[in-house]
Length: 181
Image (cartoon, rainbow, N blue to C red):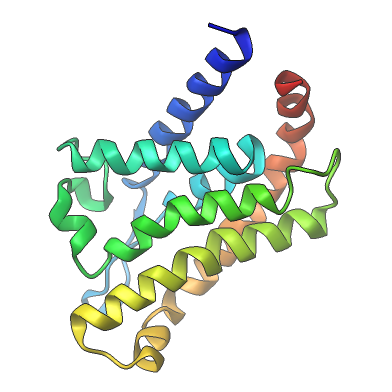
């Protein structure tokens, strides 16, 4: 096995584990809403640091761990029923979000902070929200507008996570990119 391939496998496994760990970092919201978790931070970081393929693969591994029965989803949940439930679209969106975040930055040797922030927003927020809102609206029989409004309490936290991911990627990115060469 090539040294680079082994490094990619280890990095993917570490980011899958980070996503699982951050599922347990939960900030409760009033009104019985699902809590804000740290998972999207891991999604953004995986794309920013591992690139499109590595980031998406790490999130797919996370998804498969949860489906296989390991309690890696928010609240210690697991199983296919989570992916089929009202919040499952967001988990599906993790794969798309990491891919898009990585795709928007991986061809730039030293992406600017603005590019990193745009990628984190487009991939880590928008690309995760779209399948999440669609599945939420469909299962709860909400209009797309009402489902979108339901996301407003989560947006400030996600914007903060985007900023944190950019800060961390800007600090760690050069070392990670050197290791991938």
